[in-house]
Amino acid sequence: MKKILSLVTAFAMVIILMAGCGGGSTAEETKKETEAVVETKEDVAEKTEASPEAEETEAPAETGDLANADKPLVWYNRQPSNSSTGDLDMEALNFNDKTYYVGFDANQGAELQGEMIVDYINKHADEIDRNGDGVIGYVLAIGDIGHNDSIARTRGARKALQTAVEKDGAIISDPVGSNADGTSDVVKDGELTVDGKTYVVRELASQEMKNTAGATWDAPTAGNTIGTWSASLGDQIDIVVSNNDGMGMAMFNNWSKENGVPTFGYDANSDAVAAIAEGFGGTISQHADVQAYLTLRVLRNLLDGVDVNTGISVEDDAGNVLTDDDYVYVEEERSFYALNLSVTADNYEDFMDSTAVYAPVGNQLDEASHPNKNIWLNIYNSSDNFLSATYQPLLENYDDLLNLNVEYIGGDGQTESNITNRLGNPDQYDAYAINMVKTDNASSYTSLLSQ
Ligand code: BGC
Image (cartoon, rainbow, N blue to C red; front, side, top):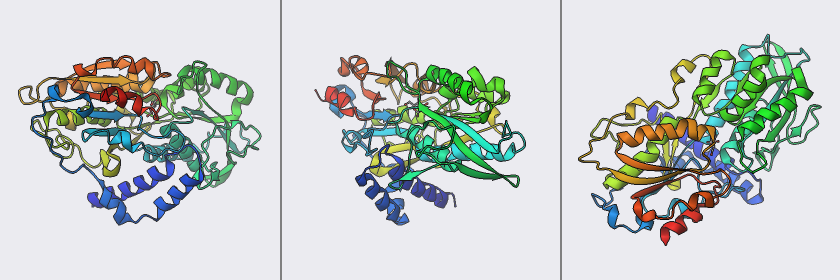
């Protein structure tokens, strides 16, 4: 039964991934989406597996003698892809036979976020419409209009709140700017019936939170913007929605907490989870504890020259193993995707420490059979709340358990060269984990490794 469920989830995921990756809506994309939908379940089941085929590299891999272009490489958090069409960059994903991507299922998580907000409305019917005008108004903080996670989350919220407008078969994910009067053509007024009463649902305002230097997902910008929005919209705002917790918490701390307005984020950063006790509406865990593990574990296996599934779908000698409730692997995309979970008032106490290792994969590897190796790993923006407050601390926990010596490089979130300049001597490392500023820029890294 679990297997069937996981196949169904995987099927839905592949369809959604194919349909929802792009920010644009070109004719080609629409064609692709239509084709994706007619794909049979069997086709998808065939190419979607919980784990990659056993791939033994010659054991033990002597990476010291390998050319940099032949060393293990994991892309993570930003999947090599065209930022306007969403098409995966298969050349980067197949850079060599030891290349993989680790991320999470953006569309499954986005749907969950939307459902979590609607559940909240249903449970708080008597207090949700603050000014009693029959309109449930929300504002939306958008992270990065060219980032597929951000696009998926905007679409997920609009779909669940019935405000979505489709163009060429895909929900429009553009910001509305201001829509206090409900006349925008990017969104429409939705309708929700709660406790027998029908409300209009309106996206009052939304914008990309980008600062003047160009950094996206920018929490301080979101904190300022809620000031502007609340000054003009006041108690028309019944709900605050954010594409991530960093921006959500900035808005909560600057305005919604004091005004008792439920605010919803994404990432399950520890501060957002703790804020649920103070009225933060909820967040989504993208299972960063599984992603951080996979990021380093895949490299560990490739360095050890063992089956890449070791300690992932196949229990390792220390007892580490994941299940298909934790992640899916899509063979065609060379990608591992962690599955998301909702975090609300009902369960937030289980998520208080976002940096704790995931117990099923928390066992120390033996140093004699898994000797120390050197990894170069970058974080695209050292001020990104999720990556710096949740993901990096997790990586630091796992690097010890996996006997990996990781050099952490923090970027400025704006320029790729700020990071690639610090990959001046790739020979010093046995493997690489890369988080690009822009998903289109994989070749800035692979060209350095190919020199
Ligand atoms: C996270 C965001 C983060 C972004 C950075 C997303 O997956 O949810 O919080 O800012 O990645 O790439």
